[in-house]
Length: 77
Image (cartoon, rainbow, N blue to C red; front, side, top):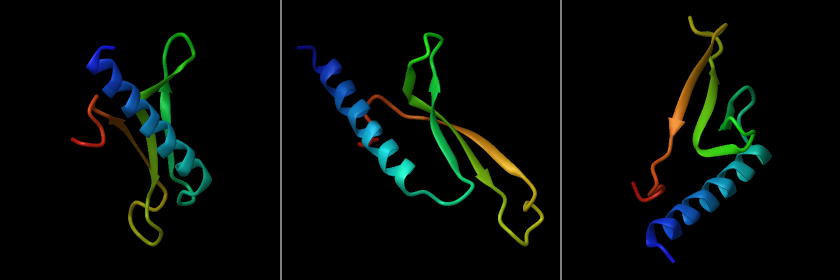
């Protein structure tokens, strides 16, 4: 089997585990989920995230979006 494919499979499995744990327990108002590919499947290497502004701060009313791109050798790098 191709070594690159093996590593990629390990990465995907690790991210699936991380996602499962995140869905069970994460801070209120925070969002992190894989981007959907055009065929409707999840792209586990790219996640859309939202972070609420901290209470009692100038950013309190805001929600701040970001995209996390995971490398093919996550979590090593």
